[in-house]
Amino acid sequence: MLIKRRRGWELPEAAATPESVYLNRRQLLAAAGIGGAVLAASGATRPVLAQEVNYAPEDDPTADLYPVPRNTAFEGGRPLTSYEEAATYNNFYEYGSHKQIWGAAQDLQIRPWTVTFDGLVEEEQTVDIDTLIRAMPLEERVYRHRCVEAWAMTVPWSGFQMSHLIDYARPLSGARYVRMETFQDDEAPGFRQFWYPWPYVEGLTMEEANNELTFIVTGLYGHPVPKQNGAPLRLVTPWKYGFKSIKSLVRFTFTDERPIGFWEELQASEYGFWANVNPEVPHPRWSQAYERLLGTDERVPTQLYNGYGDYVAHMYTDVSPADEARLFM
Ligand SMILES: Nc1nc2c(c(=O)[nH]1)N[C@H]1C(S)=C(S)[C@@H](COP(=O)(O)O)O[C@H]1N2
Ligand SMILES: [Mo]
Image (cartoon, rainbow, N blue to C red; front, side, top):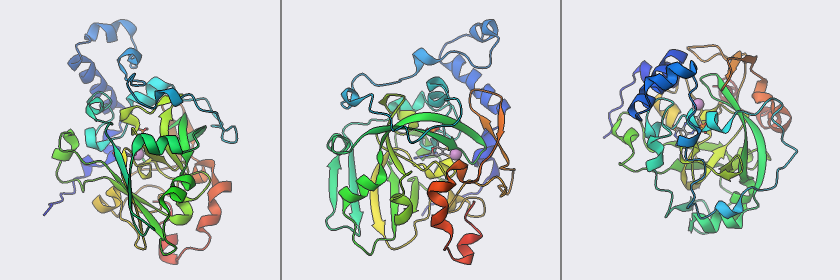
């Protein structure tokens, strides 16, 4: 039986203060043997880490697929966040409850890797990741990403619309939700933090999963997606807070019961099923009115549904009053 301790300082915003970020970065550099002199000499809080980052594993068996054609229907509407930034400032609690997990995440073994489709499906299937990726129509889309902690980035993801994956999985008509699950491997340090309700789980309604915006990511910036960003397969729902965008997926279960996500399980008073972005609904512990663009000190106003209302608002006009009260948390 898992004993869950609810400790405020382990929840995401506690790790999101600039001070803790820079401190961790400095500690990381020290641990990597890069002297403080480099930091001091550059005078920057953003040391150059590019050559340290595993951009695109040379041995990734899908590397030949990239770059994929850009779908120009999706534009970021603001400058892109650099690859360095997107690949070195991450949330991936399996590798630690802070942002500098990209080094630790290199231990993730992404082959062999299989993905299972089960629950309310015509036939349960487990498929090899390379077979799956090669069966899907890959495209590139620039999306804005908004973490519930009020930082944001804009990056070109490669992948495919989730509706294609659902066609592949052949759910039965009784399926109302899809529950998604991340790998679980005791080698990853996060799993020793036993008070978290592992594995990381997220869910969508079937309507949300089939929405044109809902994207399954296999790549970033024209390369296979880095491990720290959720290799080899990761969800992106750009109108929802980032915690919905579950990484390193191994299972899709079709169900008639609403799944309880990792954060909802841990702290339902702060994190819910819907998690749609709304500047006017504060998190219980901070405002959501503005967001900080990664790589800059710029603060910009948060947009309702992260600016994607034309694609998604219609899905939320007919929810129960109980759900209506929780659409934006
Ligand atoms: N398995 C898993 N998926 C996850 C998380 C996580 O801790 N574990 N963090 C989420 C959160 S809070 C955010 S903001 C995004 C961060 O994605 P990025 O690191 O690619 O920016 O991943 C989401 N997906
Ligand atoms: Mo997040």
